[in-house]
Length: 112
Image 1 (cartoon, helix red, strand yellow):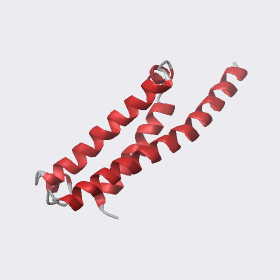
Image 2 (cartoon, one colour):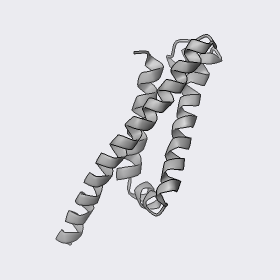
Image 3 (tube, rainbow, N blue to C red):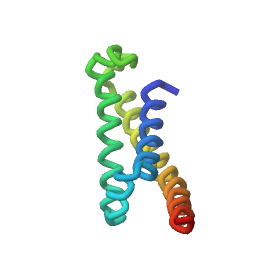
């Protein structure tokens, strides 16, 4: 597994946690419709993937500790697969952590 894929997957996981547990962000996100939530997440994941792989393609990845990649079909497909994998990780993590966050919120309201 390459470092770009690992960082892309980690960003998907951390975005999901942030939108589930960071109070003001979670409240803002919960007000959105299901379609809006999906578009926001996909957009953020696209930007993250573009930044991570784009830096490597442009030859400035080494500044961030990433190896530089040649801009060829194989590496472009790798970036696309990383993006798709990030969407799956993000959706699964959000579904799980959002359920937990709602239960924690219910138990806190019950104590007050």
